[in-house]
Image (cartoon, rainbow, N blue to C red; front, side, top):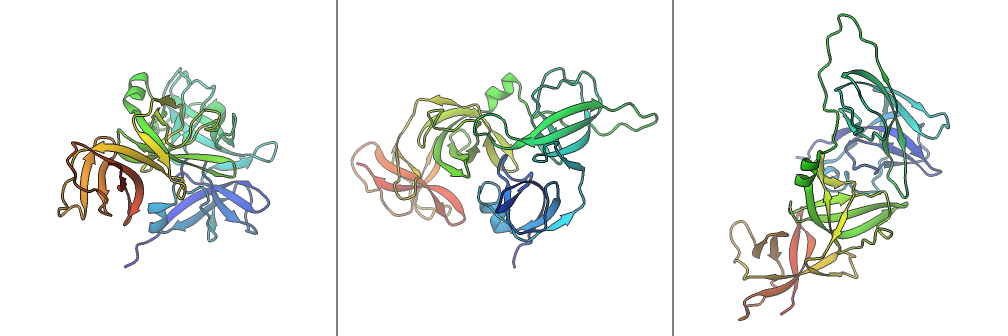
Length: 327
């Protein structure tokens, strides 16, 4: 039985001669959805569209080239306009925000993360906030920024709205707890938008990093290790930087065919297949379960096995597998 599609909501935020580009909260920051022209759309339009379960599981959140062709326009959920230049989309939101004299990013239940570069909230209350879709800095991602803030006058007899979480910013202690070690698996570019795909050692999971400067200028390349704060966004571990490059713990090489990083490990003897594993396997502190699905590892008298491993598609999931035995 085929699984039902997932209904998504988006906003047309940009265009070029060949495509409209749609912001969708469920996508990673800066990754818009393309709709080929001609299409009966304009900037500021709100749309609804369906995404299959297979796409949701494998490509929707992070594929920079994801496109849709079928959609329907829907009424705007919030006042949505064009900026004075006619090139940027602005949205007006009414939000209850708790007092916070620090300049911190805020979070909206529909629009998600909103970058705050200069506004303080000196008292708790209802605010009218205008946000704008913009790029800032060198080689940035397009995200929502606070453009203006106005505190709404109190309304007599008005029931107070339910307080909302107002910030995704992390305290120093929280940042330290969320700082993870990771290795760059590959770097993809789509229309000058750079996406860094990584393996997070401390979580034993994949993640995505998008920075405001190109990796070339930061002296980062596939196979490098770094530390950064990661947060879970709609099931995907994401970091917007900053990153701190650290000394590599492993020898790596780049696969010329797939452009994926291969890692050399020294490991103890592999466990035999069991009901949960169809091949020999071993559990590693940084890479999790590693499978020898092609029977590459041969017994020998050494204390440790040296093997090259690569993150590969196994069934419906990605798994570290042995490519070659090095001793």
